[in-house]
Image 1 (cartoon, helix red, strand yellow):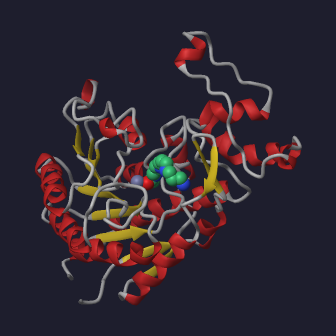
Image 2 (cartoon, rainbow, N blue to C red):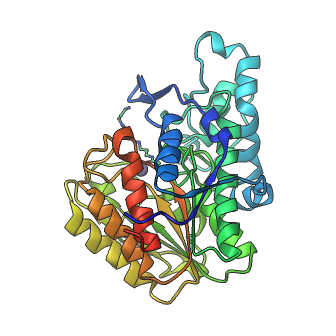
Amino acid sequence: MAKLDLPVVWSDDVLRHVPDAEIWIGVRTPGTELPERATVLRSALVRAGARLVEARPLGDELLAQTHTPELLAHLEGVYGQWAEGGYLEYQNRVVPYVFPTPAMLEGLPVRRPTATHARAGQFCYDTMTLVGPGTWPAARAAAHAAATAADLVAAGERAAYAICRPPGHHATRSGFGGSCYLNNAAVAVLALRRAGVARVAVVDVDAHHGNGTQSIFYDRADVLYTSVHVDPGEGWFPHYAGFADETGTGAGEGANLNVPLAPGTGDEGWLAGVRELVEFIGDRADAVVLSLGVDAAKDDPESPLQVTEDGYGRTGELVRELGLPVVAVHEGGYHLPTLGPLTVATLAGITGTR
Ligand code: SP5
Ligand code: ZN
């Protein structure tokens, strides 16, 4: 394979988030979104010839455009409040237990609860996305890496890739979940918009639907959101979003495309889905933000899709056919032995060096 010629944005701070556990149906299981994911990606990319670029701390106004001030303040402060409140004696991570869902409040106002253990559920919508001492600096570094990659593309690079972890596409404007805290892809979109790029298309090839990115841009005509993912109607996360009839609202009507796939789908069905996204975008965008998860791979423990390394390479080549600059931000992918090769194959497809 030819040398992979693209900048790879890195920050040591992405290693600081250590999830420790995911509480799934009440059971404490080992976390899968590990710091090793980032170091594995970095080694694979350096070995493939890519240049490492340090993330620049330039995302905070972009963060304020992406998320509510309440969510940002919560993520920044909650671990300290947890420690201060003596909870570490029982639980080493911030874990929610009560959620102010519409079913609980039935239209009553959402108060700011006094108890830290109650506030955890106001922002976190599942029990798998725990907050530890390094979560905020890591999430912020990942967002800065995404913004740096977008700025490199705005300055003329044909493609740039950010090693973002924790991932981002499940984080909504006001909430977080699905191992995501801040929406790195949305930050990249807004960085491109800030740099004067008029129309941006998100191509989300993570195995799961990016409900956060979809909802952030759902009413906007200038940002297309497109995603191929395992069918949430077949029982897969995020369960409540990612259906084909979600097409956008208001000015954003017709600017959203979901292509849900049956569990077990392999390269052929997957690539037909990716082709659908590319055809939907057509000439309606000036740049692409690729939510690059590789958890649709056949060996990945978190999805039932069966995409091969060649399928990822061809995925990259289909994105390349758009003829647009690409900002790739990493999302999921949990099988450490294949994480590097799958990601390198996709990026080689994008840069035309397979
Ligand atoms: C970014 C990303 O890929 N997030 C995916 C989050 C989906 N997690 C769903 C987990 C469902 C239960 N998994 C059982 C394994 C327990 N460790
Ligand atoms: Zn995923």
